[in-house]
Image 1 (cartoon, rainbow, N blue to C red):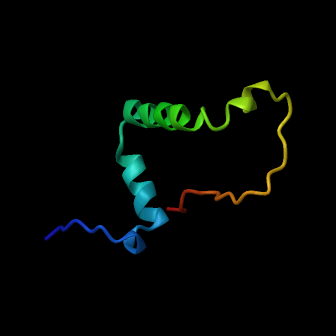
Image 2: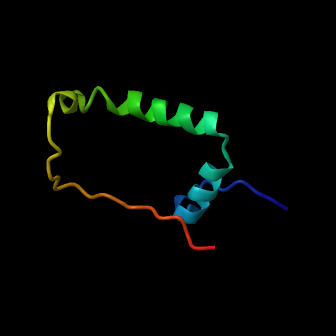
Length: 67
């Protein structure tokens, strides 16, 4: 039986990747646009930058698992 959990400790990167891959291309693009619209007000100065700058913030690189 499938259940819904609201415990963040049960959310793995792999589970999130499986969920994202289950979306249609149109849904993935809608999410990309939504995230961009969400982030744009905070980082609007990025549009004026010509070259990428190094960041001191943390980043996470996701790679697809080998099949």
